[in-house]
Amino acid sequence: MFFRVFIKHSRNGSPWASVLLQSVLALVMLFSSTFENLLTYIGVMLSFFSGLTVASAFKLRWESPDANRPYRAAWWPVSGILYLTLVTGMIVFALSQRPEVL
Image (tube, rainbow, N blue to C red):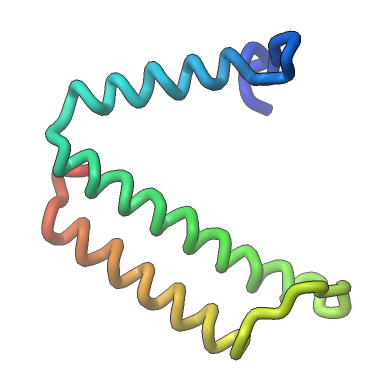
């Protein structure tokens, strides 16, 4: 579980402590690096976590093959494998070109 202070909400229902932490982290990143490094870092992280999302679909289909699936992916599992291959290639390329980003 994450720190308890970050799960608290205001009277309006917004997670004020989490928003404050995210704002502080974003400002630290903004002022501590170049804009190009920041864009590369954001792109790598977005690719990484979207790849984790697709990988989790493989895991769920492996662990629960008989589960109800109201949504279908076109050409599954080929589309998932292709996506993971491309995302991995993009991450490897980005980190090979700019290893200082991480």
